[in-house]
Each structure stands twice: as C-alpha cells, then as structure tokens.
Length: 433
Image 1: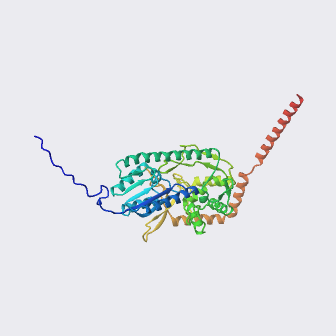
Image 2 (image 1 turned 135 degrees about the vertical axis):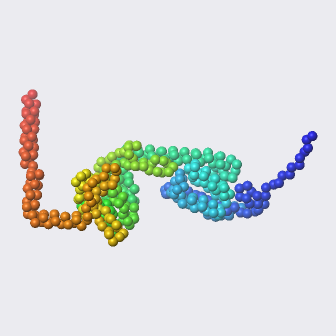
Image 3 (image 1 turned 90 degrees about the vertical axis):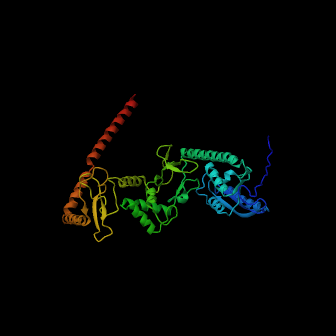
C-alpha cells in the first residue's frame, strides 16, 4: 500500500555564489574596466568616454557602491601580460575589495579565449561576478559561461583577422621598398617629410665615432664603457650602453644607406612573440634608399672585423694587449688569459689555449705565465729597436716589391691599345661597306 510522504522544503537562506543572506540588503561593490588598444586620438576619445560612462553608470545605481574604473590604454587584449590595470583589478577583486566588474564587451575584457575563461572561473570561485554590457552576459547566470566561451572565441578570431590584415599590409609595403624604423629608438636618423630616413647631424657623429674606434681595435665592451662614461644616451634614451646595442649599430646596414626589410616576424598573434627571420618568410633588400652615414667601404671593413671577432676557437679578441697575438703552434687557435687562485695570495695570471678542455681531443701545448710573456715581448721589442734601421729598410723594400704595379700598368696599356685598334678596324670596315 502506497503511503504519501510529507516533504517540507527548507529554503536556502544564503545566495549561491556570494554566501550572503538572501534577505540582507547590502550594496554590491562595483568596479568598471575600460581598455583601448592604441594611442591614436580617436581611440583616446573612446577611452575617456568609457571611463566617464562607467563612473556615472555605477554611481547612478542605488544598490551599487562605486569602487573605481580600472583602465589600460594602448595595450592589446590578446594577452594579460602587459595589462597592469587589468591585473590590478583582478588582484583587488580576489582580495575582497570588489563584488562585481562591469565592462563594455567581451572583446574589451580580453581577446584570448583561455585568458577569459581562466579569469572568469578564478573570480567566480571567490564570488565575484562580471557583467558584459553589450552581450548582456552575467557570469553567475547558468548559460553565462557557455555564451562567454562563444563570444571569447569570436573576439579571438577577430583579433587574428586584424593581425593577418596588418601583416599583409606591412609585407606589401616591404615589397614596395618602403622603409620605416622606430625613429624614437633609432640613433642617427630622423623621420623626413616623406616618412623616409633623414640624417641627424649630431647623432651621425656618434655613429661615425663608434665605427672608427671599433676599427682602431676597441672591443664592444670598451666602446659601450666609453659611451657611457661620455654621457652619450643610448638609442632608447638610457644612460648605460650594452654590448648588444653596440653590435646592433655596427651591423645595421641602414647606416650605409641600404635597408634589409623583414629581419624578424611575429610567430603568434596572441603572444606577440617575434623570431629572427632565418628564411621562413621573404626578405627585401633596398639599395641606396637614403643618405648614408657610413661609407660602404668602411661598413664592409667593419663586417669583416666583426666576423673575425666572432666567438669560435680562432676568434679575434681585443680585450687585452696580448689578445689574439699569441697563437697555438699545434692547432692554430688563440691563447687567452686565465686567473688562477683569484681569491688567495697565490693569485696568478696565465695564458693558455682558450678551448684546451673542450671536447675529447685536447691540445697538448703548455700554458704561459703573464710575466714570461711580458719579458719575451720586451726582449723582442728591444731587438727590433736595436736593428730598427735595417728593419725599416727591409719593410720599405718589401712594400716597393709587393705594391709595384709597373708590369700591370704596361699590360693594361697594351690591352687597351689592342682594344682601340680593333675598334678602329671594325669602324673602318663598317664605313667601307
């Protein structure tokens, strides 16, 4: 026999997400979020309008308590990495200072689907709701996360499309030979009326000095140290120069009037990660694009010197007076200085083959003491000074022998005369016919 059971419903006294009493009349602490992706004037108008709108909108509600409007200006929405306003807002919310975040749309909040869902779930666990006004999505709503997933994916695809369009336009300009550089971080040139590079006379002197002292033998570190000591600002406006900045200036073909375009490219539109172009996409080389600061001949000399100084078993160094001067008689590699017992009274500077202990095959040449090298150098220099007249005479005789061009000039003149006679004969034959 079926017996009817008596069931009594006990209403929940607390709200589901905030765990506050349902009957409690408490104002929600509300913050707004505004973002624009560029610093253009039209975007600035939108930026200011968003701040004003959400400030007035939140304050106009009797059941809301205004906290603040968090903002990011000139920052892309594809990542939260550099969005300080966004990160500060989330931190304040998780710290219990915010109950509700109001923003214009999903695309203003973030254009990355993963970042969007991760942040929303993180806030939801702490009882913090987000309201997207344009799409009318409340994240505490049952279908809120489903709609948010769809809208975030659409925002991400829109960002990808915009990125591809920008990339296509940039590569089209490269293919047309249109050169542009970050002028506010590029030493030696200013932006001309047509957008091309125009020499900055004051900065050009610094570039020429860097090239000159490098060819005189100064190292990258020495050049950076000298420029820092002289108070010369870096291309980025900083006080301290680095080795990488000096190398970049010495290897930049724009200083000889040419331009290699698309040296690097963006791998992922979400992370904005760039990679050096090693042949994955086309490059474009524009010759004689603008006025040169360094002559092509000097630029070529610098590139050869840089190649000679590149790291390797036989690389050239100019750190020490004897750097790249002592050569291993067994393998032909340079000796380098090493310090033994650097923190004791037995401190000693020795010279040995730089890669003596690299790999399985080790060079057997012994090390040399710094004092022995100095003694041998002075001995050799004194011998040269004693016999300097003979040495100078031999050098002059060798120069005359090596650079004597009389035979070449005679040969060149003979070939030129033969060529002229042949031309005259062809011209006479043509006239006779």
